[in-house]
Image (spheres, helix red, strand yellow):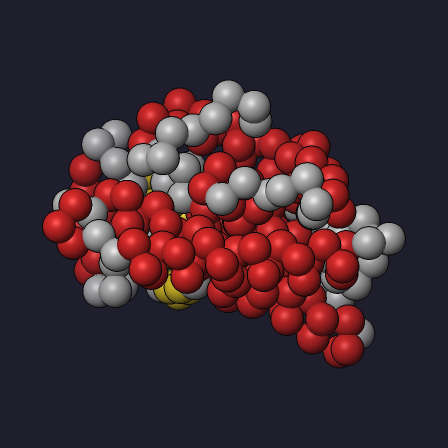
Length: 219
């Protein structure tokens, strides 16, 4: 049996896992969380009452959270691209950068997006201002780190880059990465050119109307 990924192609955290799967050519099946498969969301909720995705189902094994899913795939479905290095210090750096992209790029980015979806009377302009400030701070720190680097950690494409790709992709739509962050902008372009992530972006293209802030035409 092949593992089954419960996901939606427009979700950043699903794209993170899809990038890892495509990097290694891992065979898997998909349960689309949408009208194409109405029972998929019910099945996901029965497995994971938190109702967040992606979720990987491998036989009887249920794996939650994108970073853990990618680590699980590396252990049980290894391929030619080792997304977490064997060296303990290098692996720690990869995991640190994975958490950086999830916590300090994706989380504030999503706060701005979710705020736009809410009814106007429940919106949080102060929280949005804080989120945009966090993004600017994260861009600045990352710009210094990426000077002279091709990838985020361990001198090779890794879990950290799987996290960075959708995080920076959507963050630039939500809170533009300014010209002063030239290293971040160049890194984002390299990620978009990576075949694994480029495939995930193309698969999500039909759903761009879902983006509440207006999806730009440039990507």
